[in-house]
Length: 79
Figure (cartoon, rainbow, N blue to C red):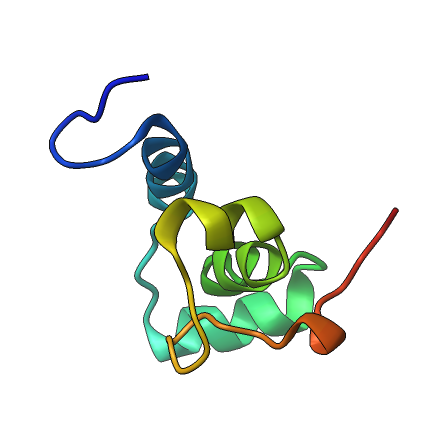
């Protein structure tokens, strides 16, 4: 796929995934959600899965020292 606006198809996929979860909450609302909602806050629904997902690293060239880098030995693996 061609790059559009400087992003490859894979990069656009991950950016659109993150945009879907974009949210800004006041502290009171976030505290209430943490007590009453079994789902992780939106911020973590992006950072945690993607920091464990090899294709994300490949798409953006994530390296040690980058903010979302997680050592391979510490990455969750389902199957």
